[in-house]
Every structure is written in structure tokens, then in C-alpha cells.
Length: 291
Image (tube, rainbow, N blue to C red; front, top):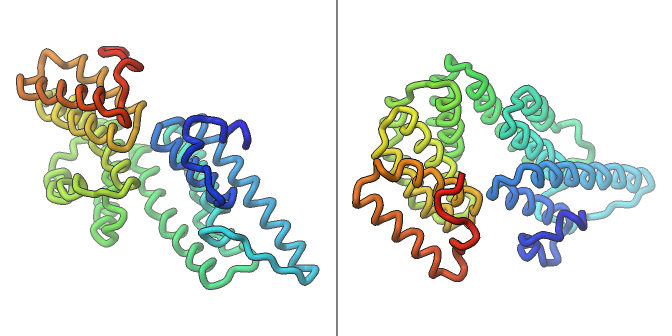
């Protein structure tokens, strides 16, 4: 884990937090930056740490010793989260069967010994997440017939709407589906998402807007697509998603001749704002028009 922590993001982890919480935070950082090799390594480390602590607690309990971990969540959360992290990694690698296997692992954590009330609540929480994420995997695999059922699931569970729409848009792009009617139905919700201020939802919103840009480019609706690219550029800077920023700059440059004067002006404003913001993006590190 020392190798993992010795990177620029380590500043986020300079605290007295337990190693389990640090690993979860580092996975979220890797997810934000689309650093999937790092995310996979952190997920494996998290699982090893959680599994070792679990067996240690079992041995101590057998000897009449009970230890309380100084963590934000009960131990079962981290055990299940390591499976969730692996499923996210495989999903983003396009390895849907492997992702499905890990989803099934955290869908049922009731076997976990020593659960208290908060532990049982985490088991139920991950069971719910597994149901939602299985829908996404099936859609990415091309099973469009599940889309109406999933849309109803999202209507019934508002908290899953934003990540759910990310999965739907990605599935539409992968499988060349037309989802215009669905996007119209959720248009008001998408506008609301733009105003979210917490980091996690802003990262999801960035991923959604990226997928919507791709969707409209594929439909040759270039003006709409470029508007989404501009929105993505603004959000990628706000959440320090540098990899997304580089990709979006390249994407805008590719279609720059199709941009309206207003869009080109907005693009230049975003770049200049990043250049002059010492906590933002240093354009000298990227270059314009790179592929």
C-alpha cells in the first residue's frame, strides 16, 4: 500500500483515518480520474485488508476478545465495498461477466459473522445496490428489453436516478439505441443534476454529460453535442478530473469547425479560466488538440 499512497493524491489521505477508510477514499479518487489500473490495485488491497481484519476478529471473538475498529462504517461495509470496487473496475473494462460475478458477491453479505444492527443495515444497502447495478450490467450487455423495468426502478428510487441515467446513456452509446424519448422524460431531472454541489454527484453528472455528448455526436447533432462538451469541460475542472479535461479538449478541437461563434467563445473562456486559476488546470501540461 505504500506504493499506492506515494502519489499526488496522497494529500487527501494525510489524516488519522483508518486504513480501510483511506483505501475507500483512494478508490474514489482513482474513479474520478479514470485511473483504472490504480483503482483495481486499491480494490484488491481493500479486500485483503478487510478479509484479514475479519478473520482476526473471528479469532479474537473465539478467545473472548472483542475489538472495536475506529472506522466510519462497520467492517462488513468495507468487505462488500471491495467487491463493489472490483465490479466497477471490470464494468469499465467492458468485462461484464466478471463485473456481474462481483456484484453477486456483494448482493448477499448475510453470511458475515458478528453483524450488529448497523452491519445488517449495510447488508441491506449493498443488496439494494446490487439490484441497481445488475440492471446496468445487463443493459450494457445489450438487453434493451429490461429498459422499461429499470426506468420504473429509477422512478421508484430517486437516489439512483443520476447514476442510473449514466448507465443508460452508456448502454445506448455502446449498443446504438435511440433514447430520445427517455431523455425528454428526464430532461427536468437532468437540469436539476447540474445544480448538485457535492463532489460525488458532480462526478456522476460529469460522466452523464460526457455520455450525452457522445450520444449526440453519434446522431450528428453537433451543436447539441458541443454544448455538452462545454458543460463537461466546466465540470471536469471543478472536480479536478484532469483526464476528462484532456479528452474533452481534444474532442472539441476535433469538431471545432462545426462550433458556433458563441460556442468557440465559451470554449476559450473555459480554457483561460483554467489557465489563470492556480488551483485549476495548467494548460501547459496538456496542449491543445492532442489525441
